Image (tube, rainbow, N blue to C red):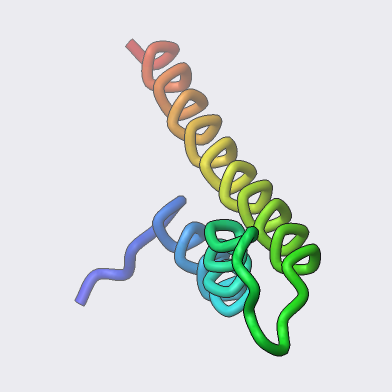
Length: 77
């Protein structure tokens, strides 16, 4: 089986490292106004904002990588 190279592996690594934090953070971002026993909505909102920032950072890195590959492809023509 061929090994995947490049960004998909990096994206999987980023997702794998932050899986639990992103899952709980994005969940906490949505019901931030509801009363949830045991969880404080301020902490849920903070974790949600941090999770959105992590996802945005991952998407930014992904698109910068695609742009760099496209520019390098143009140079070789």
